[in-house]
Each structure stands twice: as structure tokens, then as C-alpha cells.
Image (cartoon, rainbow, N blue to C red; front, side, top):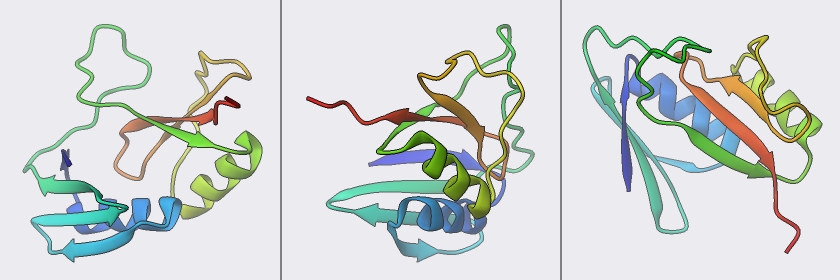
Length: 115
């Protein structure tokens, strides 16, 4: 299990539920959780939470999720429709796409390895 800091745990869980299809197994203003296949991601309220700037080489990076997808363009469209945004700075070229979740935390979508 992984627990992530959040300014909006219920909203954060709802976004990843929509984007990943994982079940929301707990949802309250101070803590929410999604689960799938024995793996859970929790979102805990941190008052005054501020996401890291993107890109900011001097800032603190709290966490970074890399999510495998079968089709980068289709996945990008799905995540943006669920509430993500795409920053202008894209260091991966066509190899991966950086997106920001609704509270501003960066994550990447990456092509699923073929092997």
C-alpha cells in the first residue's frame, strides 16, 4: 500500500478511480483509498498541501507515479477527460507523457513493455 499526501483526498481518489478504474474503498474528507487486485493507494489530507512545481529541478519531488498504458494517445485523452492536465514541458518526447493530476501532482503514462 502507498499513502499519498493530498489537499483533497476524496477528490484525489475519485480522479484515480475514474482514470484507473480502481474501486474507491474508503472516502472521507480527511482520507480516501482506492484498491485493485490487492494493491491500495491512500490519500491523506495535509492542511496547506502544495504540489511540487513542474518542472522544477530545485524543488522537492514528493512522489511520482509511472502508469503503464497500451496506447499513449488514448490514455492521455482518458486522463485529461478525467481531470488531468498536460504541462508544456515534456522531457520524454514520444517515449512517455507527463500529466498533472487535479491537485497538481505530476505522474507519467508510459507504453506497456512488450516483453
